[in-house]
Image (tube, rainbow, N blue to C red; front, side, top):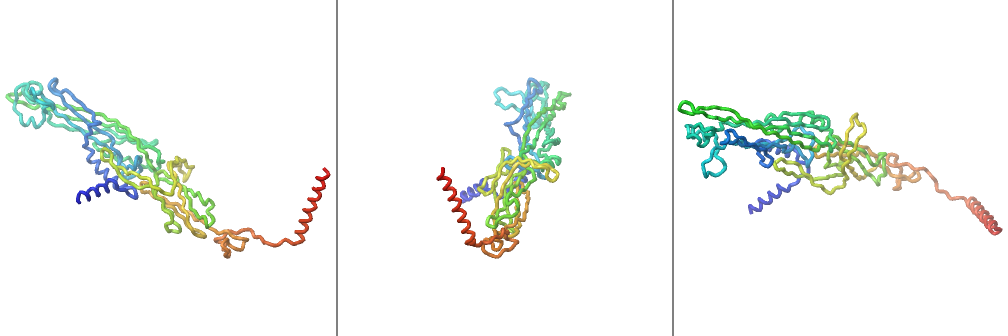
Length: 426
């Protein structure tokens, strides 16, 4: 029974969906994961070095890896301006020890000449024996190893470029100058992040020398430096949205065909829209549901699943014309069509929410009227109320007088008779 419950919980955790994007949960998870990725050695992408320190008896092996693990906030393959937006670097290393002379028949890997070995064999040894790498009867070993991660991370968006020093960090906030620019991203623009970084190994080696009856320390340092370069592009979604009333364009319509049809140009994807009629919910549009998944380094992103809905949307790449003294480009468009009932003036408001939790609203006052008949009655037969009835041209239904009818018919007969006579002459 416990096994069944466990499987149900596991299934729910893996396949759970959210009605809104779990933005805060993803950011919090990735910030926690970043601390573990500061010492995460990835052998698949590592660089290696093997250097002879006391040739031909000993070599020093070093390996390091460094790469962009991801951003603190990702929805699918996009990101957006956020106070907690940062790039996370995965890095790690394996620091080698001096590999010593081997006894005949000893298996690999080579025996290491490190501090632990030295503490066991501080006395002089026979020349050429283990860890006497220069045949002077004294042990040589790596006393201390330090690894420094440095270099720069370059952030570039449109015409703005900012360089940040790594300074040992593996989570680097996106510079404020860049974040400000990201707020107006079209939804199709890219943020470029480039690593120009290093991993510097600093080995302190004790090349002991024979003194008067005993071995004496003779310290020197040896450095190994790896250089890393990587460039990644991330699509950025902005904050701005632009609303247009598509119908009724004149803000007046027939009451039996009431509709509030709005087009939204947006710099970010919209997943939820709600229309309010006089302050009360009238239509709801939900385009996606959400989940989470991890990449190979445990960095999470929000994932999206399409839902069936009655809103149309797609890529717009629309260039607006000088609005509010600023030109913005919009990467997405949406059309929402909401029917409703009611006569007279109605307050219609649409509120939309994008993937990053930003809201925007648009309102109109729309007049709905009945038609009238003869300027006296409504289409339903009631009395005309000017506020809710469109006036029509007045007309009267009278019978034609017999005289007018007779004169008309006589004229028609005369014309036919003349025509018939003309045709017979031919």
